[in-house]
Image (cartoon, rainbow over all chains, first blue to last red; front, side, top):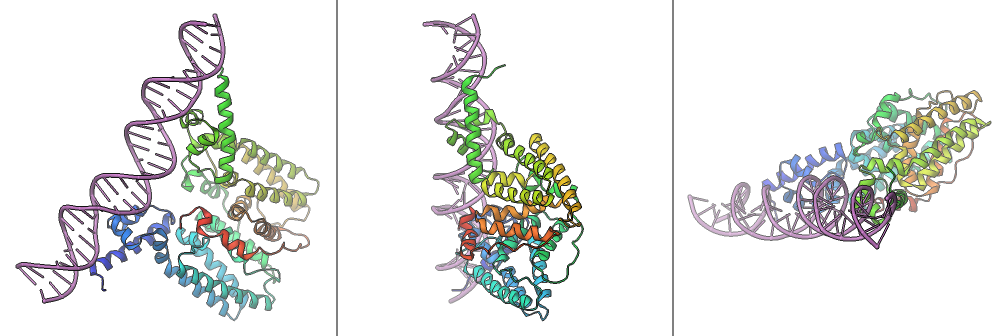
Length: 208
Length: 208
DNA sequence: AATTATATGGAAGGGGTCTTCCGTTTCCGT
DNA sequence: ACGGAAACGGAAGACCCCTTCCATATAATT
């Protein structure tokens, strides 16, 4: 049942290319672009990953596992508020860093069981983290763990602009909204010219 | 130079169909679907609106004008905080109500001068509104009018889910984050099962 | 080296979107 | 009612993305 060495090599090249291509342009990029970037034919991509969801699952398996590990580490932080804050900051960092993973974090793939298992694991740890931060008096009582996907959706569009100032500012607003402790100042307001340029239809992959 | 009556009628039917189609499925819907809904041929749509941006501009001219009027009304509200709050609540209402206009509110179209003029007018009034709310001590000093597009981006994805509970909750978080007055409680947390169902790839127009 | 099984990829075909042509239809002025 | 100009829309063609076939290439074993 062993696969040939060239087949294994090609599979690895496809996954590497997919990580690049999806990371830059999102998970809806044509499979032919993944093939081109990998230096293989389109049929080779299809044989390895007959459905796009399979390729997404494999491509982001590592990142998703790291997501779950980071949630677990945040839940284990002795300073629960620090854990909460740094988890949110980690989230927007990965949202900014990979457009494809940003999309994966805000989309559920019922058929991609491994991705969903890691997402569930992260959510369970996030529930624990929320309980600890509330118990420590640092997170408001009315915060719900199920606000996590809301926050992810909220930061997703802003993270996608690639403007760190904008992203940091929104995160700071969200943290302020759910924090129960002393206030921290917001980071500086984003540079308006940069922000509005980023909102233009052509910058967003829409034809003019 | 006068146009025939049937041409005028067809133009109106196209705009009406576009408002429906774009409102339901967003501004990237095929032009052929607009034509079908309007009961005209695809060439008729292209003759009236040679570029998609032209059709978008005309389709949402009214809504965008209302956006500007609402910002002006909010700025004229004797209770500036009430003006601020109700403006944000109006925003998410229209974001939820039309997927296309939701996209227009978070995308700039440099070639659609009328849309951009209304957006600018709204922003000028929003600047005045922010100043008044700060002067009234109800809006934090560190809030910037240029946070408006950040807030629109943040609410856009959530509004698109069509889950009012989720939308209301995120708005409440954002209001709490920038309010300087007494706190108000958050609306109830969103129903998790509904939220996660809405996040599924098939619910989001992505193939499984 | 020879053989066999595995793996490859370019191209064909299908479906989708957009652009445009041109024969036909419709409107409007006389 | 007639004639001419305006307006129409179906289909062809170009381009894009996905699926799959089959002749060819490559790897692995003897």
